[in-house]
Length: 123
Image 1: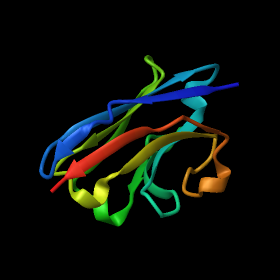
Image 2: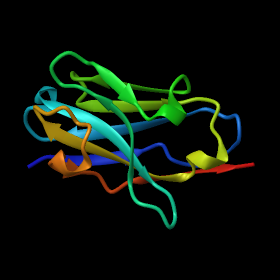
Image 3: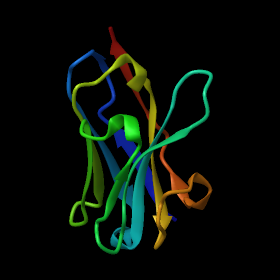
Image 4: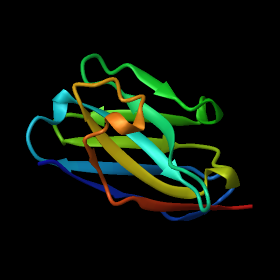
């Protein structure tokens, strides 16, 4: 079993920066592709960013490219999401997920999810 715990969400103003963390407990963190998803009120959970297990290849939702950066520290069993120039549209609960030896592009492929952390961006 793998447990994921997100942290770092808070209320910020448009244009601010914020860094989210997702700490993993369990075996084989380095064998998991790690992703960030988010869910805004009244909407489905959507893909935000992913970092692949085998080579650290990253991919991002188009609207966050150039503003968000996903990274991982396998020694700390932690994945991060650095968010810059935040916009009100970024307001959502942010979830991290773990996809065992996968590509991490499809939500249904993820094996584990965290509880989420709330990010609110005021205008």
